[in-house]
Length: 201
Image 1 (cartoon, rainbow, N blue to C red):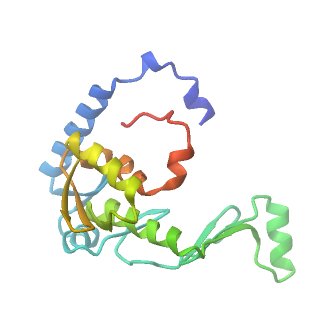
Image 2: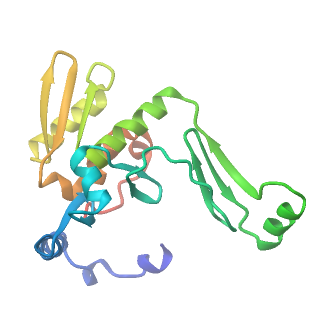
Image 3: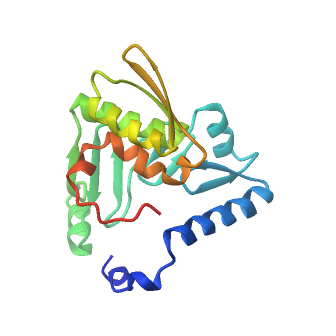
């Protein structure tokens, strides 16, 4: 974000300080009856999200964690985003264009992205498993690059790998949970082409 870029790096907490803040926050939350359900999300132990996380039923969409699996989300209002199993759409940003479309009996969609590629859908599922279950199973013969990257992360203590033939099960370690986005990004080819400008924490 433009305003955030104006903050000098030396004015920000160090990576070690950020990790310490995360650990302190987790201690306070867990001591208050919350459970870590994924990334930097917490829920009370009796909440449906915590129950879904414990039973392996937790899912994630662009809005965050959910118990509902692949829900279809219909966005209402200007700029709202809708999600369907193989389609994302965004409504008109301009209020006049939005109202005009509705008055004409049309959906006020400005743009959309249709996903038909089975490999993209498969990778999306692998990323969901990492982010929701902290574990993923894949064929290292088909995902050679990802296998190499996960071995690097295993050497850093962020994942544990169990291989049986071509199949690999990767489990995120407690230390790796702090970097779950980085681990999940291994399965996202778009992340390979982006310059590495963001900090891990």
